[in-house]
Image 1 (tube, rainbow, N blue to C red):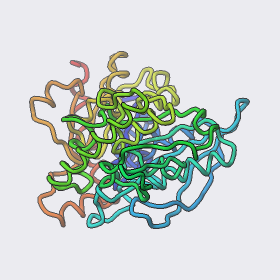
Image 2: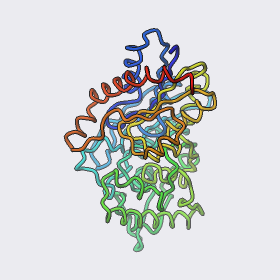
Image 3: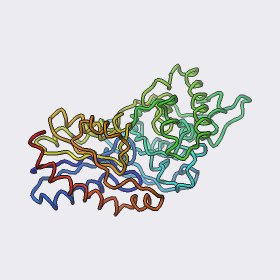
Image 4: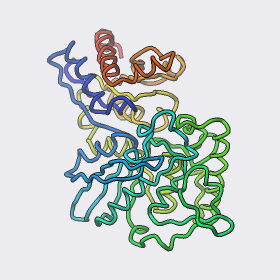
Length: 389
């Protein structure tokens, strides 16, 4: 093996994209010490996206205090890039509104808010930014982006005309009207590129709530409450702007924050993986590679709906380069795995059977060692069979 490219997403809650690449590279070097290894820091809209995009530019990092999903102060940072067209802010939503900011017992998408993400956007705006790249994904929220909009000056009222404050998932169904008079005109006319990691619409069977709210702590009754609120809020958007968020791919990203940016700030929804792979010149980098290694923390049916591993596979496959996928958890049938175009899909560990085993499996050092061992065990087999691929 002469050249291997590592192009993995983060393993959410455990290792960053860079740390996954480091662990995989250790495994490769132990077998093929002379192999050229190229490690890419990547993301597809969630955690790590901001770093991956900023690494392709000259940026200044700004640190501020913002509200976390349950209203506590937390330290966040975003990147500023300056060019001939002015300032661009590169903001990762997970910094202020991420699920990793909360303990498991704090997860509650009825109460969590994207307010902190709005504070980050507003801070950049007040520094002169008129162009924004917002990385979505990894959120603890299902508030339709209303918390973010509230921080930016949007005002939401109930049927009596009462101002609704502290916007969150459980208050969505109360909203009957929207006032934008307090929002800066220059903000409304700014450019927003919205980097999504899913194609999920705002509501519906495959919408934000039904697909992702359970991962954020929602019970069955919570899901019905949230879905009702999302549909109600979407009807207000339809009435005010003529936009059907239920039919807009990506509008359900980050609990509907994608839809809020699209409808209220004219955001351009982009698949995060493609944006980042373009930025790092992925096709050039993988030329003459023997293998590409990709992955993410959980590989399931959503992986094939525009997430990073599937986009890596698509681009490498066009060049005839085999791709190995690794994940902390594989939630796919044997048939689905066999029908995929990956040369193999491996879980880096047995499925944890208890909370204690899960906690151990999520430990960063354990994850890194499992990745290293998976690579060591797989590569000799791949090397023997690759001539037949």
